[in-house]
Length: 155
Image (cartoon, rainbow, N blue to C red; front, side, top):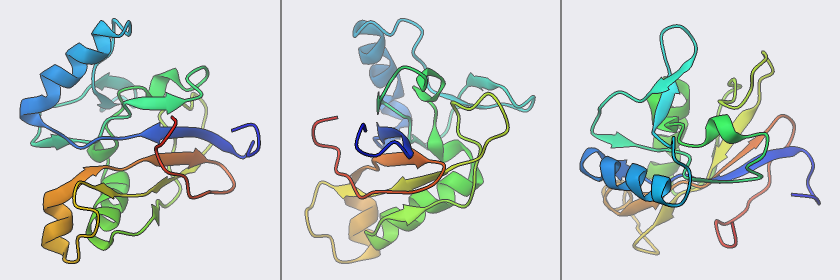
């Protein structure tokens, strides 16, 4: 991150099913993040507990944490613009950048963008169906200016 100050954060975003949600939230709270829950932007434009749905894409790990705490637990799949990019990355196997979005950790009106890079349990899925079935997570990078291709190793 020091070498790339244009990056605001690097995140690990697992795909979590409805059935797994409680365990994911509990494990994070056991790690010391006592208020951790999946969140989304509510009707009033404020962060609120994420609604129940079939799957989630929460920000589970992020670096740096300081200054980005509001993104911790944020469900990137709750917003149509973000979800479209997530699904495109999942289906193509390629990095995908969102259109400009207000980042969850932003308290002002600054916009940035996210880049998603899909990671699969099958290292070489060749069809859309295989990619959908074997998607594990979508590491993301937040930036206001530039993106870099990074793997989730060492986060």
